[in-house]
Length: 412
Image (cartoon, rainbow, N blue to C red; front, side):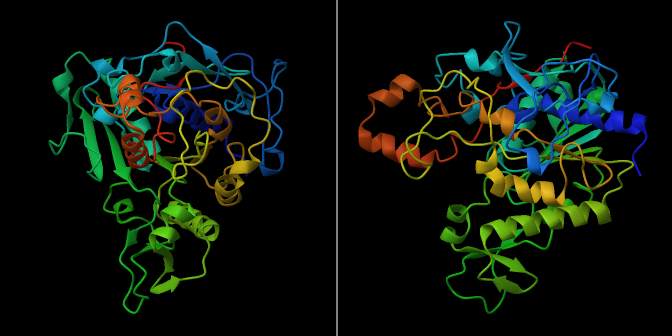
């Protein structure tokens, strides 16, 4: 049975909100976004992923929930960025790209404009917002902290509840905004399922296993389950070179599945997520969102074959005609969890950002991941040093800059 229109609008509001924090630019999650203005419909399922619908002709009397906020374009906005990374005390040093030597700032000037709707906003208080996933989710979370902090005059009222500084090495952080009684939390879980030692009797060459039939241990103990807004992402670690080639095999129960492919394991983990949400999460309290895969932008090779993205300064304005090349990452999500128009579970929305992030080849760390790696400093180094540093920075064409991509969200 279809959800009531009001409830569907509320869910769309939260989904639109997450667009504002997608890929490291965050619209304050003290804000809720909802569609308003002239609207249009573009139902997209797996069968139509290869051909985006044209949404330029807007009008008529379409229901508000029919607006497709995932179809649109990147537009230049001189009023952006929404915050400066130098003014944010919550960023890891590796994400401070302007301070680390990136000479241009054009990547901060683009915002996402849906074709047939705008994203106005409204305040949100007394909530737990939880990000769980890999470094892409961490980018969003850090940018969100920066965005939220711009509206708080007393910065001492924002603190990590365990007193820990942000580093890349800790598994989770919980920041509280005291005046709003709101926490914004991040839990590192690249697979969303647990990785650990193999069971007794596993072959000696099996260094670790990824248990695809069980959720990460942090999903319990009230860490994820009782959040008001729960944002998942996964995908970039589900590759052969980051699993099997590292002697990390897949496991169900106490059995190591030596013949299970990466694609089958990823699909099984998505099914595990679906089952956990259905069984453990109260959909009347918790809004769950799964953020789809964000493409990498290596040129001249992959991360381990000489690829790079250091010279990109502008987005690709050519519409992405097909996302079939990322089908391995998208089809399991759509088959198991559903699409952004037709999620298969109450209280779940799919944040389908693959097509829009595919255009943002300019929005990566590249060689500006630390203060010593400005472009000129990089160019001055020997080829041997460059190669060592390039290999050490395998994620720089995956991870996004802060501040980065922003979305059309008029002020409240």
